[in-house]
Amino acid sequence: MMIETFECEDNYEAEKLAGLLAVQKDNSIYVSKISGVIKNEIIIMLKDRSSHSVTLKDEINLWRLKSLVEDVIAGKKAISDCTCKSYSSEVTIATQ
Image (cartoon, rainbow, N blue to C red; front, side):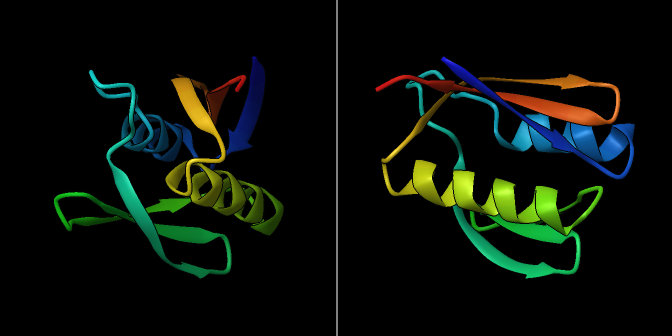
């Protein structure tokens, strides 16, 4: 297992990110795509077609998160857990 930590702008954004990437009962995530990025903000579209923005600490965290989510959507990686710790969200990536 590998753990990726994403630093967010504040605790609320970290909690929101952890909730958006939460693992469902069928071991999938509810994210369908990345709708866009603006500076250090990422817009995530869910399978119910709702969109949610998450503001990260900086663009480095944003591009790392975008890459991970795109890999998960493409089936290259799988998330096994996502937790919030202060201003960060920790994503546990299952080994394949």
